[in-house]
Length: 327
Ligand code: TXA
Ligand code: MG
Image (tube, rainbow, N blue to C red; front, top):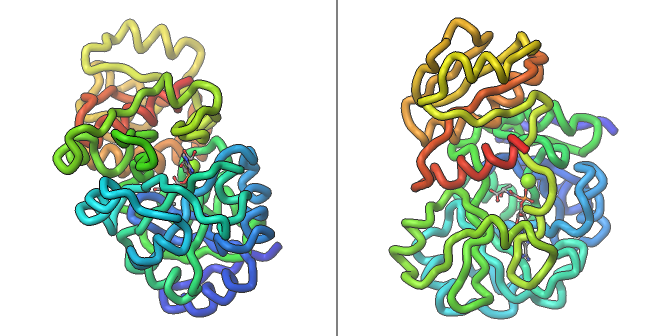
């Protein structure tokens, strides 16, 4: 399949592609999404094929107006309304009871649907022009780091999808926070762009993300996608701390001569790394991690050392991705 690369002034054509059941990748504020008409089962099925995505991993439906939520959700509980008022548009996905019109391919057979109102002008304009909500997972091959630039999308999906909208790099760099609003109290299913601390300011009773719960076999309220392999570069990922000593780096590097390093502080042995990225904040680290993984792979790096971060704010999502990538 020939992939068409759209500029941001060609959204009308990209929207036509979507209306005719084709797949188009587009930027959001978190990561690039791989969009399809959420109401068209055949179009949605193509997403799973293009990504090599397991069929039991449901998709997020993207809308361009908060009122559009009722096109896919049966009702919006009060707690969800409060969260929407505070964080939409933005990197917060809400799991709600699903309308029967939403194809089961979108929700992997669940009675709930995940909905997101992204905060990105291109994404919003594209959804509006398409005139339908867009089902969109991250625009990467399943298991790979999410794509934070159109070039990264092309690396994984050129020739496998109909189109890519070429916007700039994404701001947040990690995926949205997923909150199950069908239970009381609501529960974080995936840490992401909106921190737990900010969610708790709006909803005091919200339950924090529990990694073990998300990894256990399917049960209502879990985020099925988190059971699968995720965010992994081909290089081995090793999480280290600022206290990691030369000798410890050396023993993990044994026989592996192309090593990369990303973190907030210089490691004790900077000369040993082929490439290093020292970020000035956790926010910058989050924004650049996936791109750094991809660069390491293009350079055939064998190992990427990643400095651990504090489990607060965006750090919680970053730590989650680091841990998953290092398995
Ligand atoms: O930031 C994001 O959320 C990006 C951009 C493109 O919007 N999208 C994204 O999609 O990360 P994806 O498919 O890579 O991750 C969707 C997550 C998965 O963990 C999936 O299991 C969960 O949302 N999910 C989707 N529908 C669900 C549902 N009905 N109940 C529980 N979890 C759900
Ligand atoms: Mg993904």
